[in-house]
Length: 290
DNA sequence: ATTGAGTCCTGAAGGC
DNA sequence: TGCCTTCAGGACTCAA
Image (tube, rainbow, N blue to C red; front, side, top):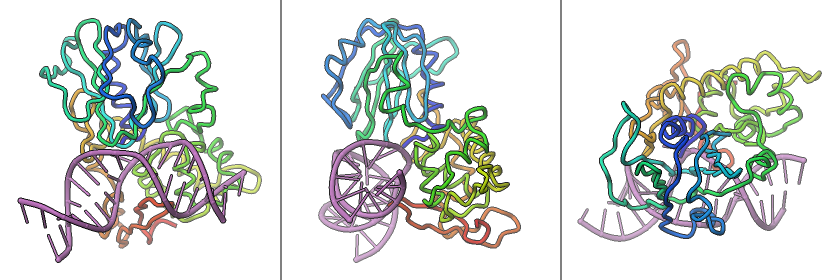
């Protein structure tokens, strides 16, 4: 489900509830999500204090007080919700029951509970040494973080140099940019007026510097991600933030999910098309995206 | 080295 | 109403 803006929205919702709190109890409703939980997963979490809740790409990172980090990925349909006490002024969930697909429950020190729900179970959780996180297989080969300060036209040019793959595939490749998914790749390419079929390497000059169009693309990626975070992410199907609120960014999609509808660019007469690249839908305007 | 296909899993939506 | 097919925000493994 979630791309970077959705994961960041979840992080911001969970951080005030989780940071500084101790995990009193852990309940696993099954032995695996996408992968089996690591050995003694529940025992290793129990009693630990959560020092901070961070994010890298689409991963949530809970730094624990014993030098390990809880790594969580939401896959396609993962969601967290909070039940019980929360800080003053925060949304308070009615105390709920275990629902279908509630797989993990973390009970915190003040009886607040963090519940992970994931119908498709493409998500996963594991533990790793905090000091070695950068070398962990999930993170060692991750690309640029698509936010201001994490990516520039120059660094993007370096990552795309010589790439003969279609731009769509390159932007979806987590080793190039870490955190973009199908929605925001489509939206960013539309904003930069770039065809998803164009070969990625054509956006880099022979001397390795970014072309003007690549500079535009880098800006488009950063602004679409920042705008989506500001809107609380996109709510499609069952996506909700940790506080139960719905993201609003889907109302501003220019192309995603808009097949056969008119291009939103005022001077453009194009109709949004859907093609399949690498087995996934790409939405774009064949008239203004070149 | 890269890339496309198949794979995991459930649920929603649309056609008949 | 139900049964069937298709599709879905991700990303790993494998074959070519």
